[in-house]
Amino acid sequence: MGTTSRPPERPGVLRWVGYALGGGLPARYASWVLHDTTTRTWGLRHVARALVQMSVPVVLVVALVPAPAWIRLMTALGGLLLGLVFSLAYMAETTENRVKKAGYPPGTATAAREQAARVRERQEAERRRAAAARRAARQRARR
View (tube, rainbow, N blue to C red):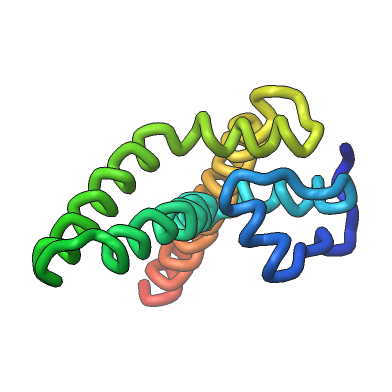
């Protein structure tokens, strides 16, 4: 699927919650899924999806476990932290699976993130060269 000049169509809140819980999205959101898993903030987006997924068991533990509130809250916090550790450990695989569900070949998200990183590195190198050239010009002007 090629790149387009217009931004990808975003899903509504309910569709996004379903997507965050592991569901698929209709084909018209495929470019958004790729954007979601490859943009510069893809890690933060992954954590947001993970928190939505973990909110269900956390709420159930806090609301339904027959124990003092501090035990329920500490249990929920421990589960949340453990869930985040596992979620971060499998972040790349999870995002690749989401992209695959959207109809892209396996490895697309990783390749897109690597390409974007190379572009950012080239831009940063060019910015540094330009800054060095400006400094050198100022130095020559002072002499």
